Amino acid sequence: MRVLLIMTSSPHYAGTGFAEAWTAALERQGCEVDRLDGIPSRWALDGPPADHWDVVVPHVLVEEVAAFAPTMQLASLLEVAGVPLLNSLAALVVSADKLATHAVWAANNLPQPRTFALEYLDAWPLEGQAMVLKPSLGDGARHLRLIGSLGDARAVEATWREDECRGGERRGPALLQEWIAEPACARLYATPQRTSLAYEKARHRGALITHGTVYERAYEPPPAMADLARRMVKALGGGLMGVDVLTDAEGRMWALEANAPFGFDVTDAAQGDFVASVAVEAAKRAGASRSVPARAADASVRVSPTAGTFSSVSARA
Image 1 (cartoon, helix red, strand yellow):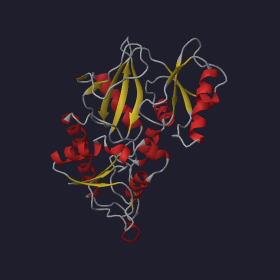
Image 2 (tube, helix red, strand yellow):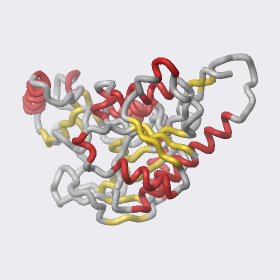
Image 3 (cartoon, helix red, strand yellow):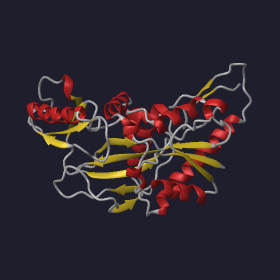
Image 4 (cartoon, helix red, strand yellow):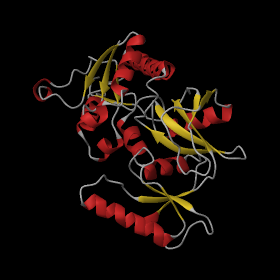
């Protein structure tokens, strides 16, 4: 089985170890792994080798999605060419934008903190309650603030826009989100069918965000948590995502965030083995669907992102 890993070769990302961890985990599953960070120039003459890879892992970062970077361009070309992607382009885009993510979850009635676009507010939406100000784009909990008034929120947003004008990172729309006080935050790697262990993130009491890169504890997720994680991914049309679930003091669970791509603990082989096994299963399902004879002369085959792991378009009958 041959897998293509799409990942930036930018020096700022090389030290994360994700390329090596993904490659090692896939090789333990018996896969041959190739890696590209953009569209090879020769493809303009020869076209992409649509039958060369069994599945593509598009590890396209949020900022690369926002800028339609070379990794995003490569993933889009391969999807159009009919190569199965672990996460479709739609899933990459909608999970990269928190406003879009929460809109999709709201449409699917998933429990989540109430989220408002700051631009359209003329009054504080949750009277007497502090709220979390966050950008729609970005990851790593950057730029999050606990805010108590509309004026303060708009003042902080103004500093974001000034920084963007100076060439700083794009933040997208400013969001105000209901603050779930003192929650437990668990990361799960999930598909519409499967979930990993729940990995609880470290957080100091009273802190707004979690800290550290190693999880405090891992446990089998309760059925309700596992079900919520699977629904979070399915609603977004994803094949495999890292999702964050909050649990408050009363045991209520909230969908907080979905990540495609996602980071995992590169020192934990079990996490790597889980995500690699999901990629292999996806490739097998894609191979099985490719072997089914076409029913008609229609040269286009479309798979709904909510019907299975992939959303792809094949130009072959």
